[in-house]
Length: 494
Ligand code: NAD
Image (cartoon, rainbow, N blue to C red; front, side):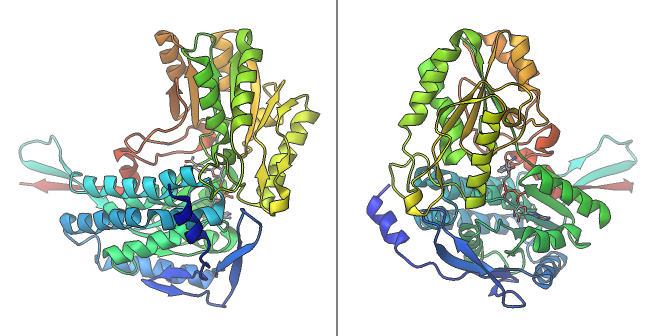
């Protein structure tokens, strides 16, 4: 990464952003805008359109028309593949610009942002472009006077709602399979991180995606998000975000057309360290990175450290050293390992959780406070709390910040019970040199992703989806495609 190129990009003013509807940039119907605050310094970076109900309805109508006239679904697979491959190339060609814009908007450290945002988005779009002409229907095992065909059809109009932590990456997890299968999409990004996603959508048009196939509407969840959720013209709703919003989306579906709803929600993921872990120093460093990168604003963050009692003090010291060695600061400096918290609201919520943890018997061994306040930005020191017990708030509630709660355990069974003691089931890890124990942990910890002797980094070839209140369905891998197709049977008498 070249710091001078990053500095040149960050010096550029950011233009006002509008919706992308029917292939055009359009302002809100009532002219409303929202200020975009940069978490780096708390200053206004630019504005986005504050969408109205009418804006969202226009976007849905555009997507519906684009689907119904088959301007995209009706193209030969090879043509759709070409457009999506070109789109992935354009994302890569503009990677630094997209990453810097995104970091100015959401505060993720640039090293991680470059890989996780344009890097991962391009890889995802390319993956589904490559897959799209390899997904066929089936011929059923019928009596010989019957031909039973199972077609895989696009669903129609997909409504996608995404959060602020990785807008391009999570956006691509929805857009890649949805568009590859021939659907039209209306996407609603987060109020506090939409700019890089809007730019990425423009690149789709540059690559040749027909107007109306991808629409992006910005604004408040309770206004444009609700309109999307309640629409009778949206066939599938795919969502990444908090459980509270996920619950609402299910209600919207029930109150409208019973559209399918797929939810990728939060977690309280257990990172279980046994005394026989192959390399405890390495485990401590990866444990720190697994909770503190992107200031803990990662759905799969290992926010509960379950550590075997015999190594508790030694291991907590090693994780504390690793945390304190991590460079927190301006996310656009290449050396920064932990950038800014996305918003002041989120920063205050994180600090509130630390106060509650202390009131409930926890001890802060490092961090626990806002730092770099003179920058005007939203920074928090990586925080480790010991003395956490199974039922206290920081063991049960997702914080979505740089806060690690530590709990000791003595037996494998106790580790599993603690690991499974929340309503969530998104990710987890076990560190052990014992192969049988590792497999037992994979089997017994109730979660969508279980890491062994590492944390994070699972690529696009494998699904990411939660169990329990972490959601349903999966993003990533070929399995994600199932959300974006209908099966249709043709039963033909010969
Ligand atoms: P959020 O639920 O507050 O917002 C997510 C999106 O929903 C935003 O675009 C928001 O505007 C919209 N929204 C809010 N209210 C709405 C409503 N009434 N109707 C329709 N849409 C509405 O979540 P967030 O704070 O942006 O993101 C953080 C959450 O996302 C965390 O819980 C995190 O764990 C989760 N997350 C999960 C994954 C995963 O893959 N499982 C990945 C990243 C983040």
